Amino acid sequence: MNLPQNNSFLFILSALIFTTAAMIWGCKSDVPSTRSESTLNLVETSNGPVRGLNEDGIHVFKGLRYAAPPVGRLRFKPPVPPEPWTEPVDAYEYGNRAMQGSGPGGPADGVQKADEDCLFLNIWTPGLDGKKRPVMVWLHGGGFSAGSGGDAFCNGKNLSHKGDVVVVTVNHRLNVFGFLQLSEDWSPDYASSGQAGMLDIVMSLKWVKDNINRFGGDPGNVTIFGESGGGRKVAMLMAMEPAKGFFHKAIIQSGSGLDAPSKADAVALGRELLKKLGIVEGDVEALISIDAQKIFDAQPSMPPSPPSPSGQLTVPIGGFVPCVDGIVLKHKPFMPDAPAISADVPLMIGSNKDEMAIFHGNDPKFGKYTEEEFIEHVHSVLPGKADELIPALRSAFPDYSPTDLIVATDSLKGYFIATVFQAERKAALGEAPVYVYLMVWETLADNGRLRAHHALDVPLVFDNVESNRSMVGPGPKPQRMADIMSSVWIAFARTGNPNTGGLPQWPTYDPKNRSTIFLDIESHVVERPYETIRQILVK
View 1 (cartoon, rainbow, N blue to C red):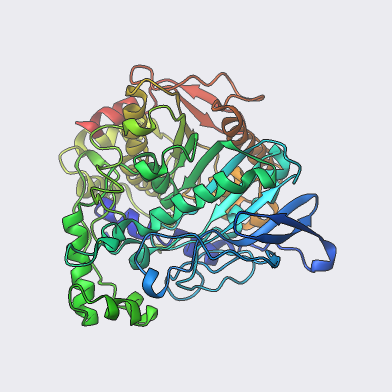
View 2 (tube, one colour):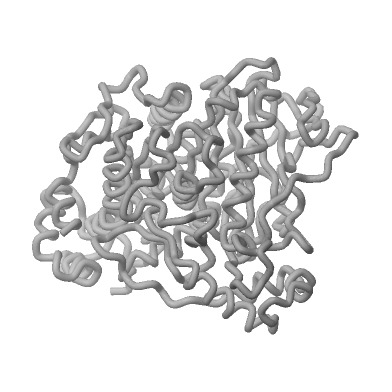
């Protein structure tokens, strides 16, 4: 069988999920067809005046610069404020997305140029009236190497309108430009070069704190949320001292970030790249003058990292990702415990039932695997647990085909168990509530063969059904599900409690009851879901 043998495969493909989805789903743009259909509006920010649009009653500002271009002498350094301006700047189009792989970096609203100069954010707000609305800051998926705040999934207009909330999406440095950790041979200015991309997000949150009141938002009620790689960024921020105080609630969707590589491992990877570029340790002039595309192209191809113990979802060493630098991030985000620095931050966390279906979906054998091949797969990815796990999987999913059971195996050993670890560690701090969900609603697209796959939750949370019909499917049910999902997210952002009309009472999570809401057209709460499987995986 040609199937993934360890969790690193999940991360490699997670980094490309939005690129893949762009090709599969062909998401449409939500930008207005002509500017004459919209009304211009002007806001004075701390950096200077900006002019946005009014689209269907929502004020939209795209491509707002929140930091100086991270180029030249600012390359690989922490972000700094931009030079102020006095003349109004048009905020009609998305700013550059971070440099990433060739072709589209994700399904996008309109054309987004990929460039090293990528520190921009976007805002959707119902009013410029001084009203203190909840603020929802979205961190895009694509691992730490791809994606954009302009991805079509996360156009914030519908969510903003529905919930009377301010929606912000952020672009930041990715891959080598965001996470190249330089050694001690470089100047102190580069001490946290391996966290530059995360510090970009912190800078964007500081911009939100300083400015969002001018866009009708409450700087004292900010929720950070993200899916896949975006969820892992949320987890990182919860453990980062520079981010403390800039957000007040957190939502992690299908991206439980527990682990991070050591600084030593990150430095070793960086040295490999510098050697390939012919740059001597400490040669700042060479580092700032070399062409950005050469740096991008020189990123080494790393072998897959070994399977993690107990199926834990970890950041792979094989790639440029945030590391434990001892300054910005002083310890692993959620290993062995949840970060005390964010103990008072309410958390909502969950995943989708069949996350891995989209990764397997293009396999010619998808839907055709035999019972014997399912058994072989479980033995290959979870040796030592297979004899117990196989009957437990069949019992938990009695109507699943062998292909579906393969997907379930990989989804449970990665996403589900990582959510369990993260939720129970956060709940153990006892200072803020934790709410856990599993989205079990299955897409109607493509005859439903991908069930509740990775990223299916994103257009539902953003209430972007019509522009993503090829992903969510036809008929009224996708919109009904979007109404449920978006309402839950809005309620949590407003109060820190996701309970809202139409749901059964959703209890907080604790290691005894492990109360988890199964989000569906008819949602229900399950105590200790998949408990036999959980016990097998954590042994």
